[in-house]
Amino acid sequence: MIYLIIIFLLSFNCQKIESRDQTQFYKRLNENVNFYCETGYINVDDVTKSENKLFYHLFLKQGIESLEHIKKDDNFLLWIPGGPGSAAMKYAFKYTGPFKVKEGKLILWDYLINEFSHVLYIDMPFGSGFSYSTKKDVVNNTEEAANYILQFMEIFLDSHKMFQMINFHVVGISYAGHFVPRIAKKIVNSNLDLNYRGVFIGGSWTEALSQYRNQATTLISYGLIDQYRFDFIRKIEAIQQNLMMEEKYYEAATSTIDITFDLDFLEYFDPDNVYKHTNDPNDNSYIQFLIGNKQQYGIPSNIAFNPSNFTILQAFYADTYMSYLSDIELLLHKGKVMLYNGQFDYNISPAGVQIMINNIRNEIVQLWKKEKKNQFYYKDKSTQELMIGGTIKQYKNFAFAIVYQAGHLTQLDQPGSAYQLLKQYLDF
Image 1 (cartoon, rainbow, N blue to C red):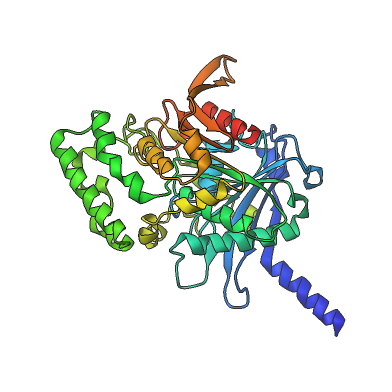
Image 2: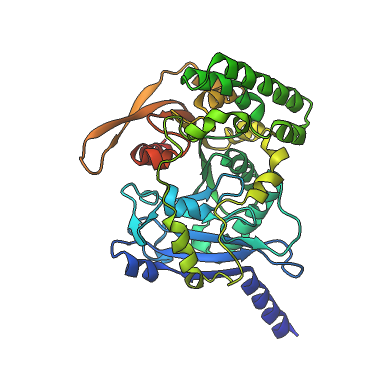
């Protein structure tokens, strides 16, 4: 009887995680790969009722080719995608690295995100990237999405015990300004064997009430709209503000959907970077690479890769307008918080993020306001010259940085600056 119970438990655990070592596969594609790589699925929630599989990709730190060589003082990043509905694999193979795909070839980034730390990317929620669920209901809020990630980490750490109690950070960009604080909050309040250290968020969408107030001001300051359009956007902003004050979040989302959708001039510029034209070349070779290697990754044949799931985006309309600022306030008592923004990000403008920061109720942030901004520098890896990356202001465990000549996707626009900021975050 005991023997049967043990067999059942082993079988049950096997149902929860499926992993594959991809190191040699990537080495065949690029001989310079010198770090362990792993892909897999983790089945969360009640596995007896439905399949709820989150796809992940793990990259160990540069030079570490075995899980057994992980050290207790290593850094471990949990990378959470934005969107909502954007695939984390889009970041791993296009926006942040360590890989990018060009003309079908696998290339290493010059500024490797895993030079300083191990990185775990998760396609979340279900329906983004290669993650999927047999449930009928779509995840439609940050709280539910974060609960699944907490379950994911419990299972992952149980099967990857070498990651227990090493320095753990939750990082991401854009809508990760919702996901990252809530996930980090759940982790610090859990019994997980992790040495939680902090959060690192770029272009953080955290509190719509304060961040939506300045879109008209941002556009007119860049010289992209006239007074007529300025007045038009201000009216829409006022409608959204009133609805949010009444906690009518879904109505705020659906009444105007997005300020930018009603402006015909937007066909001429990219909301991710106000100085980029929307017809700039957009190489999506990574999609064909991932689809072409589904069997290698253990992806079911009936599962398609979804880089940006619009159904999930729609499902999160109400959640988009909710505030997760209180989570940031809590996390300032638990570890480091670093926020950064591209100078030319209209999608989530630096001005809006700074207004949001001003609303944080925390003594450290109040003292941070009195600190002086300093320039930060990075070394250009091709010329070895020291380059100005932007400005940073830090006080104790809180910092905010502006990256020069970058839009919403800072890592793509200014990879050297993004690399340096991550290094500074890990070091302070």
